[in-house]
Amino acid sequence: MRRAIVSAGLLLGLAGCAGAQKVPTEQLVDSQVSIRQAEEAGAEAVPDAAQHLQWAREQTSEARKLLERNERDKAALFLKRAEADAELALALAHEAPARAEADRVLQQVQQLQQGTVQ
Image (cartoon, rainbow, N blue to C red; front, side, top):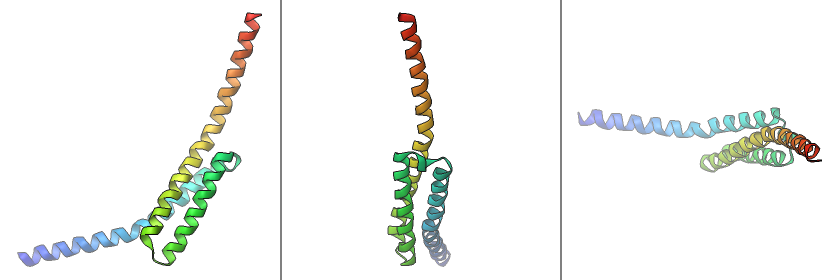
């Protein structure tokens, strides 16, 4: 019985280690997907979004170098930052047209108000 418990514990430990090693590569894919989504949303045309997109690319590149040197923990941190910057770039890219439309509507309202006041 004791041997079975120890064996089960070892197997769970090994499974945990194998799962931990897989995380940075999954994060690499996730950050690349987020970067691609931001690019497709037009983040490069929005200055703030473009800056975050560039940071995401740089952090992903640095994470690749760290993975090559088997520095998985550091790579995982860079990839978390890269994905966060890419997601922010995507959000900013989506916000820009909505903000422009809101500004356009606000101008129309102001013009209508000015027309009725006179």
